[in-house]
Amino acid sequence: MSENQAQHPTQNAAASHAALARKYRPQVFAELIGQDPLVRTLRNAFASGRIAQAYMLTGVRGVGKTTTARLVARALNYEGPHGEGATIDFDEEGVHCRAILEGRHLDVIEMDAASHTGIDDIRDLIDSAHYKPNTARYKVYIIDEVHMLSKQAFNGLLKTLEEPPEHVKFIFATTEVRKVPVTVLSRCQRFDLKRIEIETLTDHLARVAKEEGTEAEPAALALIARAGEGSVRDALSILDRAIAFGSGRIEVGTVRELLGLADRGRIFDLLETVLKGDAGGALSALGQLNRDGAEPGQVITDLADAVHAVTVAKAAGPGSIDPAAGEAERGRIEDLAKRLSMPCWRAPGRCCSRGMTRCAQAPVRSPPPTWFWSGWPMWATCRRPAKLPASLTASARRRSGPRAPRRSGPTCLLLTCHRLRRLRLRRLLRSRRDARARGAQHHGRARPVRCASGHRKRKSGPAQRSR
Ligand SMILES: Nc1ncnc2c1ncn2[C@@H]1O[C@H](COP(=O)(O)OP(=O)(O)OP(=O)(O)O)[C@@H](O)[C@H]1O
Ligand SMILES: [Mg+2]
Image (cartoon, rainbow, N blue to C red; front, side, top):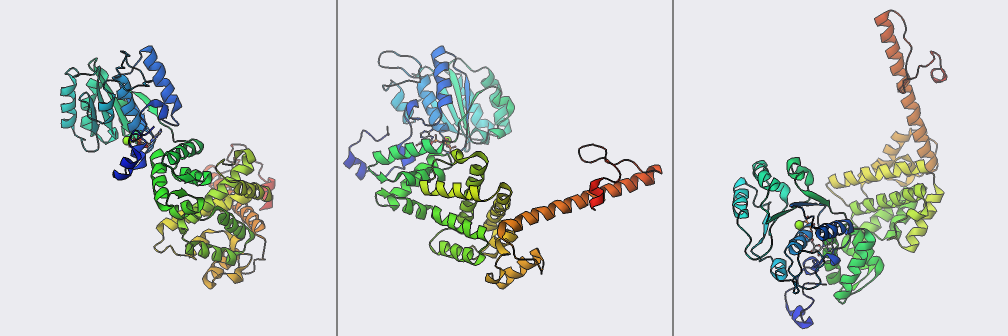
């Protein structure tokens, strides 16, 4: 599976440590995870001899673009020990495979467009493309980060890309396909590499951890996979750090500490405290989390994540809960989803997203941060204003009005929504009245008013009466 697999373990230990992402770069298509549609399309194309002259590989960082480009170069030039031709199913190492994998084959030219952006680089490339390959079947040009090429360089490439010599193939890789001119895109066969699913990534991490002789808790691997956000490289580098950090054993606690994450259970405790309107309790919980090493910004992101999980479970049922969530977490999500109605979850979501922005902008991030609470609506602060610091109590009073009755969180939230709706209705009626007045001035008579949907409204409808 790995580049270094064949090496002796003691030799491995003695050798300088290679990053896991590098060490476990797929050597065959079977090792490429989460990109099945791409592999199937390539397999069929190679089997039927319909090999494109140029491929464009796009996708976010670390999902296998460069890896795929090298594998395709190897497949194009595959020459098996029994005389096999181009194929993507190379079980045995072919004549050119080793040199291509080590990046030293004369006919596979890898160019980093980030450092070779100009027309001169492309001119050199085009000139060399006219010469036949030295030993291989095709001359393969892999242009990584192709979106970095200058406009002139892209234009210089167009003619050759449209009608390349028979022995030339181009493979482009980019994270920002929108920066590539459509004229180039239309000359390529495009593959969009997907982010890797959490379960697939977790299985991959488990395999790597096993190969590395490290014991790992499945929940810890799921956490790492989630933190990788679909990127194999990101997940593998976190795993690398986790192995070093946990001295050979990967546990949930150590991974949380490493990632600056708060314990998931404590995030749900915090959410429940806030929902109860216990501002004092929430502030002290937040302070404790910070003292235990959780980043305030990460706490808010986790809160947003928890709110999102509950609303998804509420809308689509318990079956939609992330499989990476543990048994206890799943129970709490289901419980919260049952307890509150959908509109009650809207404000927490909004507040968390506002909190995330404020946290990124805050000069000092140590809690209890006022910017955090200023984001929460009345349902978080109304119930027990006495427990809040003076400045916050004042701002809560300003928002709820000096004589606002103390209400339970969700009721307060619903009232806010109700007030907003009434306010909007009042504004709408006022604008209609103004429009009618303007119409009367213009034509010398009153015109019928149309509502937003285009329907005629009676002059003295129930809405107007309610005003
Ligand atoms: N689909 C995948 N299957 C298995 N491993 C992968 C996959 N994608 C990436 N990797 C791992 O991540 C490493 C980096 O992959 P690669 O260089 O192909 O990413 P990339 O998409 O080109 O990223 P970037 O956009 O940052 O250049 C590989 O060496 C490999 O260990
Ligand atoms: Mg790359």
